[in-house]
Image (cartoon, rainbow, N blue to C red; front, side, top):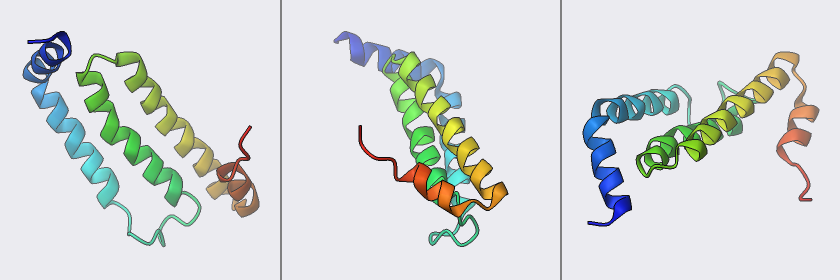
Length: 104
């Protein structure tokens, strides 16, 4: 057995309930919105970005890449924080400018 497979098996064996809980939480996160985004007009895209990070983090950490998993979760927090700021202020122009950033 190679090292990445061994890490994955040992990690999921030891933290199986934690992985199931994270999967359950990400499922609740995505089921809390409507598919067309009517209930979250300014934060819908950010909400989906955060969901992607929640789905990826357990898989990434199971492979032993802890720093990258934490970075993904931090990204989810930052995206939702910025989106919430624009939503609270009702700043649709600022939100659009933030979401459509020009490539460097």
